Length: 523
Image (cartoon, rainbow, N blue to C red; front, side, top):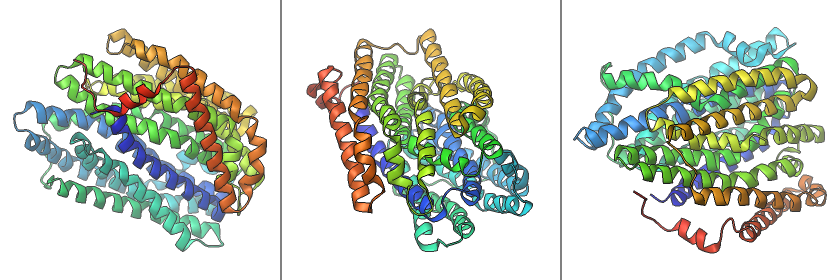
């Protein structure tokens, strides 16, 4: 499958989800603002959101998809053999998830304390409120884990768009709850948001089950069977979770330290900045990771080592093409972007400045967040989940050190910058190891384009910097003016970057035509 075309399918739906997420965050800022209520909900939402990133978008897919493809290719039974393995996995996964959910509901108090650091100085009643929100969101963990099973099957069958569309239901549900059930009391609004999180999980599961049924994929519930494949799957999931989730684990650490050591509202600044940072990460990183893992595992299963190498080179090339301009734009234009999205209602200009500062710190690590998604399939497709977890563990340790060093002098910018630096170290280790093992070698085309893309992104940043002062007064006006100004700023940045790519000869029109044409893989 042509990588650019597949990324367009997955990335387009992911972009739609992320745009809805920005709409949701904009409404959340308007109706709730930045304070204890918003911090409490975001802490309650952190664990389900982290679990989705670790399990649904990372660990389970990394372990399940290569094994599913191997069963389909090698067992002689085709899809039937793969589905038999999926049923065995479901028979064990479901009771484990139910037990885990019950345990977490009982342990909601200590879990909330660990995620928040106790919120610093809050009353017992306020902390109990945060614990109650956590209990409302915890069922989402079970639901999204089942979503990841059905989504993994559909991704293996190259029906990428179905799974990519599921997060749209999460954001649509939370938006509906904000519009229909908001209140003048932020505590009521955030409680309704917590309920909507679990409702969205049920809707996503229903969507994936329906899509599987249309593809004639029906999994039967049966008694748990601890087969050799199931044991191997479970053994791979743990390391893959830590390996794929270093960024998420780092964010949890950063959030807990911010809640404990920084003033009220700091958790909200970090969260909203991360949401903006997640827009290119979702569009490029998750999209590429979704497509690369089944593609590379299928190529390696067929003995096509050269094709797998070429696929990863093109994936890295696409990642740089989209990521470098996004990084520069979020650093240079963070203030007008944050003002456009959040500065209205209960969200003040001071809140906007703090969010833009946190965004700039996060964006330093944007290339590394995305390159993790591009490089780890090179390990997972070869059934190696231990190496990424080793490097992720080192990155988590670095994140703690950087947090403790930076959080006091840089305040709400400290935790995001610590996350960026530790993620960059993780990527450097992954890249060096793949090259040392001979599993990745940057080809001439990638080497030629990488530095040219960096120059083109810097040219775009130099052009956008003086435009900030011109556009900023329009970002807090009426909705039409605000969004029109932002659309124009984005369009100008995209135009300058496109011209700069042609001037530096990073890409030529003929290259873009070739990228969008189906091509035969190298062998």
